Every structure is written in C-alpha cells, then in structure tokens.
Amino acid sequence: MRIVNTPQEKIKEIKEAQQQFFASGATLETDFRRKQLKKLRQAIQQWQRPLCEALWNDLHKSEEEAILTELSIVEGEIKNHIANLRKWSGRKRARTPLKMMPSGSYTMSEPLGCALIISPWNYPVQLLLNPLVGAISSGCTAILKASPYVPNVSTVIEKMISSTFDSNYIALVQGNRDTNNALLAMRHDIIFFTGSPSLGKSVMKAAAEHLTPVVLELGGKSPCIVDADANIGIAARRIAWGKTLNAGQTCIAPDYLLIHRSCKERFVDAFKRELQKLHGNDIKKSRHYARIVNDKAFERLAGYLKEADIVTGGECDAAERYIAPTLIDNVSAESPIMQEEIFGPLLPMLTFDKQSDAIEFVRSREKPLALYYFGKSSEGRKVLRLTSSGGACINDTVMHIANENIPFGGVGNSGLGQYHGEESFKAFSHIRSVVTTPTWLDLPFRYMPYRMFGLVKKLL
Image (cartoon, rainbow, N blue to C red; front, top):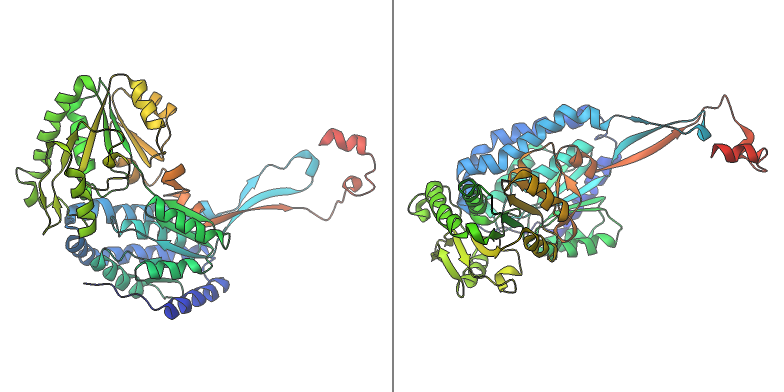
C-alpha cells in the first residue's frame, strides 16, 4: 500500500472551514467537548480490530502489544479528560492584593484555536490520537497529519476520523514531506509535533514565521544506568522488555547501557535468559517481536553491526526487515552508534567504576527524553537530582508514559512542552488572567495627579 498526498487545495479548504467553525464558538461549551471525547472513545473501540490488523501489517506488532502500548493509553487519556474536564476548564479564583481592592481576580482557559498535529510512525495510533484528546478537551479544532511510513495504519485512522467527525472540526490529511511543508507554511494557532530533534528544529523554524506556539516531543539517547547494588535479574528483565518493545523503535527505549563493572558479566547472562523468556528460543518466530519499519531504517541499523563486538544477537534478515535484539560490548563513546538515537533493538554497553563517572557521562551529552536507573531508590533519586531528562524511572523502563496523571515531555534537545492529563488540556489552551472591578467605588489615589502618594506608597 502506498499513501497518496492530500491535494494542497483540499488542505487549504479544510483549514479555512476549521477556522470558520472555530470562529462560530461551537467548540466552547464543555458539554460539546465531552460529547466529542466520548465519540472518539467509541470510535477507537469500534475500530480496534482494523487498527490492530494494520499495526500488524505495518510493524508486525501483536494485538496484545497494540492494545497495551497504543489503544489502552489513548482510552485512559480520554477517560481522564472526560472525568476532569469541567474542573480543568472552570474559572479559578486568584488572590487580589490590598492595593487593588475592591477588585477581584481569576483565571479562565480558552482554546488556542486551530491545531496542527503531526505524528510519527513508531506508535502511529497513540502518538496521533493522544494529542488529539488534548485538542478536543481544550476546545480546539485539529488537522491531523499521519505518517506515510505506516500506510495501513494511516489509512485506517483516516477512515475512522472521517466517519466520526466532520472535517470542518477534525480532519486527517496524508502525504510525505511535501505535505508537511505545505502544512507548515500555513498559519496555525498551535503545532504539536512528535519526531526527531532535527525535524523538530524545522517545525520550530516554520512556526517562528507566524509566532505560533509549539509542543515538540522529540527523542535522544536515553541512558540506562545499572549500578553495583541493582537487582540484576529484575534489571535484565525490564531492560530487555523496554528495549525489545516495538523492536526498540520507541522514543523512550533504553538507548545505551551504563553498567557497573562489577555486575557486567552477571547482567549479560541474565539478559540472554530474559530475552529467551520474552520471545522464545527463535525470536524471529515470536509473535510479539516487531519488524523494522522500512529498508532505509534496516540498512542504517545493520550498518552499526558491521564493526560491533556482539555479545548476543546480531542476526539480520533484510527480506523481513528483522534484526535480533543485540547486546554490544566494548563500545567507544565516540563510535557512530553512540552519536545518534539508535531507534532499534541494539543495546551498546559502557562500563563505569564510580557512580559519579556515569553521572558525568550523562551530563556531558544532550538532555535525553528518558533516564533509567537500577539500584537503591535513594541512589536513584541522587542520580536524578544531578542529571536532567524529560522523564525517568527508578528500577523500571518506559512505564512513566503509561500514567496519564503525570506529564510527559522532553527537555532541551529532547523536546519542548508537556502533555498527558491536565498538561494536555493546558498545552492547547491559553490561560487568561482577568481582573474585574466594581463601579460602586472608584478610589482617586491611582489617578493623576496622584494625591496622598505617601500613603499609596505604603500599600504598594
């Protein structure tokens, strides 16, 4: 299957229709937004089977993994917004200082307007629809841009969206980077982009032309630190799971391993055992092990293996775009595999002798989207205090994205802005400050020529 670009004239028509619909005020009522959230939840449930089949066809992603890592996360987000929308969107009183009496103050939320949401291919359902929940919740309209690299998924989502919403409210457009460029040339009220840091810079540059706010969910090389006192069995199991989920094509997958020299050999043995428990003796036959998205990505990953010191794994099949989970030893910090986000099932190891060395290594690089620490919780908190990352787990991997009650986002090179839960509502909203002043009293002190200024100064 091949994706056909949505004609640019059609995109312009959608954009103009959404601007008119937003200007009508139809999205402002809370009841309207909650109704649309319920429609989205019902649509996901109705389209679960086609979505799972499409994820299998594009990524060899099993139904179980599709539900766990894609559909259930979106449904959890929707439920959270339906339950809390009235509270989040209501007026919030604020304290007013004595100098402003008898005025009162409060804040109110208003939707930013017409949103553009651009999603990647690796979690093509979750990373497109989760931001959409925030757009609907806040009262925005939305143009969705799906990834052409997963054509089956993008086609199914387009059918789902068009059968659920009017295009003057929510519409999905298809295409390659030409479509992206056409969309980014337009003026939007907010752009929500998930992808690589290099593309994120292009999005931010385009947004700057119109002073459009952006949320950038990017990536980076997320470190996984295994300290001397870590539970090696648990660490190996959770790292193997986090790294082989979607064949490592996860923006918050453990990208490289910093392991204390004293436990390296035990970890290697445990990692091999845990891979076998997760995927069986022949991983290639595992129903729960995904494939690399396309030939270009496969060739890039296979290229890393040509000069690698492989501890386990390394098997490749270009015809199936299969690469086995691979543990790599004797890696130099300057090697090619340590320069860019791997985005695949390869896990290079670097050893350290002192925790401070591991901390310094992390600090010397760009701020990652995630950081994982295995060891005593108290030591984990110390490491987090001395480093920076978008999110983190202590004695786990990946799971922080599953909690819709805590924000998710990057920092520095790994992203700008946050979402999930109330943060999603805020991401697509403007928080407006309001001061209301009665007319029954009009004190003269603030007006020129500022009489009794000595008294006024004491109140300031």
